[in-house]
Length: 257
Image 1 (cartoon, helix red, strand yellow):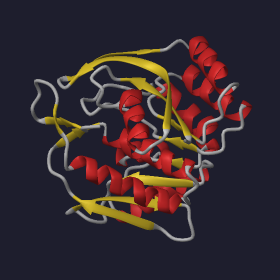
Image 2 (spheres, one colour):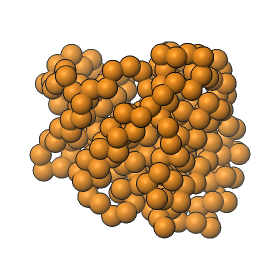
Image 3 (cartoon, rainbow, N blue to C red):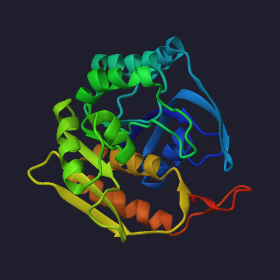
């Protein structure tokens, strides 16, 4: 059984962060491991507070785990602070992590900051160059590329800017290529690839977490990035069909995994 590690925030509602990452790993037959980089107080009603795990504690967790177990892939999510971005980058280098999938989480859907502004330049400089795949949504791609995305051409140009920072691939989630489908676009290979699945109406918690975690599993299994993204998209679409509310906010659905 392959081993996959998530380094991300903790969501006590189980819908996002390391909790749903672990569920995703297990649903795909992988042995999941998790290191929290931040703690949240949240529910279906929103994110009420966010606190970083002290970088010294994060470093101890990373050293203890990675000096013992070699993951087939590592996925990062919310890191919150400069110190934690730096700690993760140092560990990736020290332990020679090859298959690094970065979900550059910046904001919650309710607008809560999940990566502080002073940490974004460090993410761009130190962590992105170590990544195999980066999976920003449109807003995150704008922040990483330093430009607005208003068209298909803008998205292509932004992807080029992100690739110039050093990752091998960038998967931009959402975009302007199709309005009737959930379409993500992969850049970095021999050609640009668009992956479309039917648009599922309604808000589902943790979609980006599940997608990046699934990509990590398939890459850990040895799939080429293009095939890993295709299979991850199919997995997410299957789960979206079964998503249901979990809390008092009946408009927010959760993956049933």
